[in-house]
Length: 500
Ligand code: BES
Ligand code: MN
Ligand code: ZN
Image 1: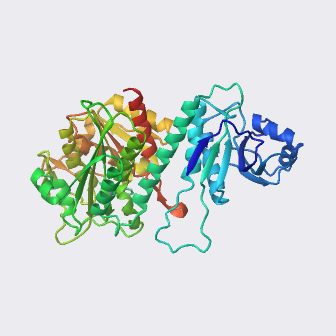
Image 2: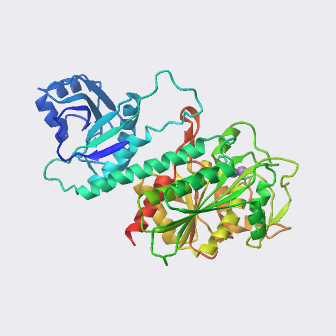
Image 3: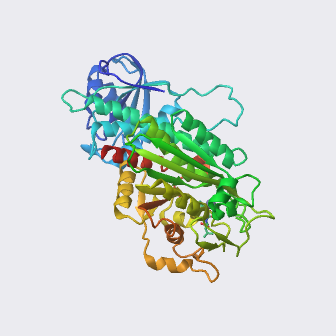
């Protein structure tokens, strides 16, 4: 995919498909006005048909518009009002992406710099448009036989300049293009990893993908297996893996873009490549979706990839504990007690609460890197879907400033999160009569007690946890991984990079 900023092209020049924004009810964008004039009123005649109301999310492809150079004219509705609200822009950008993908356009010219967005610069708005277009190109069809008529995908986007007198900064625009590309590539990779079925995406396969990605970018990598885990005393991770024929892996990557002595940002992602629940077996309905239980790991890997591609001046470490969780004669049984790397013993009341176990040892391992902050992300609890649905991720943490940064990154990237409390009172629910901790805290506040469990292993550093069980994938007709929270993470990292 090529995206170029075209200072010398106007909307009247020949092109395959010109994209312009349209307002509701007679209000005209600058570009719509120009086309109205040069086409001898074509646009108003079309709008008079009433087929297109220009509300955000509506798109219309027109052929044979007179008086302009473009073969096709694509109208994207942006609603009414001087300045577009964020959510509406994203809705319009998504719809535009889907229209382009559905029509299998290979080449589009965007003349969208004449719509202004509330609280956003021109380049930030362009980033949202581009993300909407790029994301809609994603397909996961590698296991299907080749189509008779292969789908054409988008090859080239021309970004046309803002109208005269506008304060668009060229460099900012170039950055927005590079950022949109890097985020979309990282996002697509996270989706690819997650959509891959459990018989292919095993812990060692996931480690291989991470190592290959790292090698291409000069990111350091190291992969630990059961022998090293045994030496380190990671019995929670080993305890989850012991019911599987696939060996567990601890994937560790270091991107060193910052000063040699700068403490790293550590990202820890749950890499459970298939969660059957173990001896506390899950019901059959939708169990296939538990191949997505490595979405946290995929997002952490994708985020470090984007950071390297954007050459962010930061040191970033990624840790992904990877395992399967299956029932077996060797598997951990309810009531078993395992000792964590941190020394705390854990009574495994429910073997399906495995994510917190593998994360606990990975979070303990994080300490050796003397982190500035540690952020973990995991498809950790079904309760999170009940609390926040599929729209919003949960954030909990032991440091207000870090939590605020993540909430902010979620807002700016339209990959939103919301805070849940980590009050001390909830720790009560994790008491065990036989060990230092129980791995479950009962039905009430399931997302919070899961985070409380993690908090026992993160006392030595600033830490936040993202529960992405609701946002990481979609069920139903458009089933598949979403790539979330990659946009949130990349925005967080870019914000950090600006502060360096
Ligand atoms: N991976 C699941 C959480 C999950 C469930 C994510 C459904 C998305 C959809 C996790 O390992 C799990 O099974 N959690 C249990 C915890 C419980 C046993 C305390 C859950 O949420 O039911
Ligand atoms: Mn589970
Ligand atoms: Zn799980």
